[in-house]
Amino acid sequence: MSRIAVFLYGVLSYGLFFACFLYSIAFVGNLDFVPKTIDSGSGLPIAAAIGVNLCLLAIFAVQHTGMARPGFKRVFTRMLPEAVERSTYVLLSTACLALLYAAWQPIGGVVWDIANPAGRAALLALYFAGWGLVLYATFLIDHFDLFGLRQVWLHLRGKPYTGKPFHTPSLYRWMRHPLYVGWFTVFWATPAMSGGHLLLALVTTGYIWLAVLFEERDLVAHFGDTYRRYQESTPKFLPRLLRRGERRPAREPAVLGRGPRA
Image (tube, rainbow, N blue to C red; front, side, top):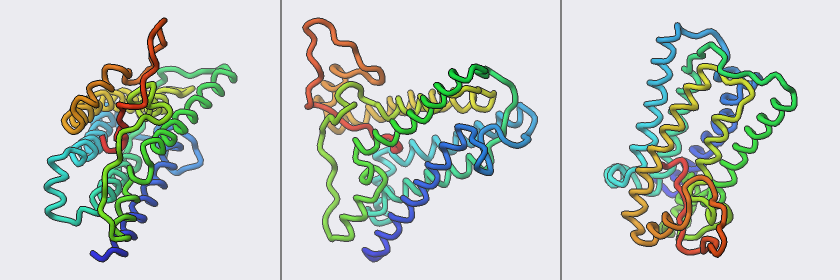
């Protein structure tokens, strides 16, 4: 592939991803200005709907986690140019999400439904704040590197791709995975929790906890004691209240979570 073709491939992959990201806000939030949401339409019988939805989530999880492993990357770069590795990951993740949204089966039932207008408004505000945290955390990591644009841009300019150095910008000084905190908020902050939404929230929460184990194992293998010290000084998800005499976490060591690549 020529350098221009690689760059255009990366831009296209990113554009499709970002469109899917915006659609996700409406899909999970059950906002009815899009054709399909998590609770819209008439679905299959409950047992069949649960089975279909679990299969869709499994497809995404296998792709999302499997392609992020170092072993897969080594195989991938023997078959395709290394410069398109991240963009291909992003493109296939987007395809799996699109499949999930298109084939998702609504499941009836009401787990909770907040009637109080102030309560509904507060949960909706928290929901959108969760999406804001997700997006903000990707920019702390380096949004354009994370989603492949930096890789294809460097390739276009004839420069080798280099990894990002350790640093602890903003929220990463207080928790190791603010990106995942944003995802937890997105999936659970809803004024109306249906059976289908609960299934999505439970499975994705379990997946994130499992993905963190794989991700941190890889980070320890790559960064060694630097990341181990970061684990010891900084909690995973919730900032630790400072005790008397306790120091704030230093800017070094630290690491940035992989987010979508976990």
